[in-house]
Length: 288
Image 1 (cartoon, one colour):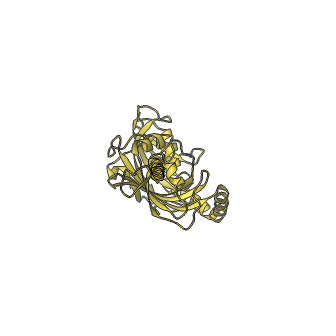
Image 2 (cartoon, helix red, strand yellow):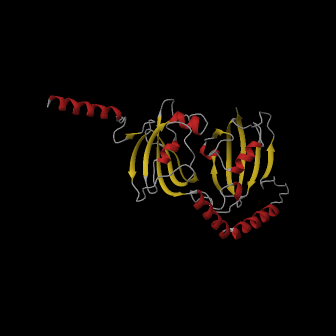
Image 3 (spheres, one colour):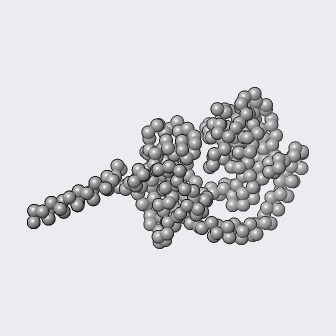
C-alpha cells in the first residue's frame, strides 16, 4: 500500500512538472511563452494552417488595455519565423473562434514589423492582441473567389478610370503617370538621404478624395507616421512607391488609382469605397 501511494505521488509530481503555471489569471500558456484566453469558440473545429487565407478582426493593445491599432484584414497565413510570434496565435484558432493573446511587444515590433517600439511601450513590456477568426479559406478557394469577384466588378473599374481622367482634365494636370499608374509631382526639393529598403522613415501625410474631402491626416492628429520602408503591412502600395521616389525633406503631391490604394474592396473601415482614386500630400521628414 505504501509503495502504491509513493508511485501515485511520483506520477502526479511528474505530470505537474510538465504543465506551465499561467503567469496571468484566467490565461493559459503555450510552450513558446504565449499567454492566451479563449473569448469565443466557433462551431468549426478545423484550425487555420500555413498557406490558408484568413480574414480576421485584430486589435493591438498595451498591457493596460489601451488600444493603438484596430483593423479588419485578409491575408495569407505564413509560417512563424520565431517562437512566440503572432503567426502562432493565428494558427491556434478555428473559424468563429476569438481569443486574447499576451505576447512580447519587443519581439513583435522588432522581429515581425522590423521597426522600433512606439514611445508608449517600454522595452520588456508585454502587449495584448485580440483576434477574431472570421473566415478561413484554402488557397484554391481564395483564387476561385478572387476570379469571380474580378469578373463581377470589371465595370466599376472602368468607371473609376473615367472619373480619374475627368478629374485630371478639370484640374489641368498634365503630368504623366508612372508605369504602375501613379501620378507623382514633387512640390518641394529636399537635400537629405534618398530612401532605401530597410531605412526607418518618418512621414507626414494628408489623404483626400478627388472631391477634396479629407479622410486622414497625420498633421491633424499631430502624430507623424514612422515605419521601416520595404516591410509588409506598413503602408499601402502606392505610398510605398511614392516614398521610394523621395529623399529627406521632399514634399510631393500624388494621385493613387485604387489598385495602388484600397483596391476593389475598399478599406476595411468602410471609409474608402471600392474602386476609389485618392490624393496624398506627403512630406518625408526623416530617413535613417
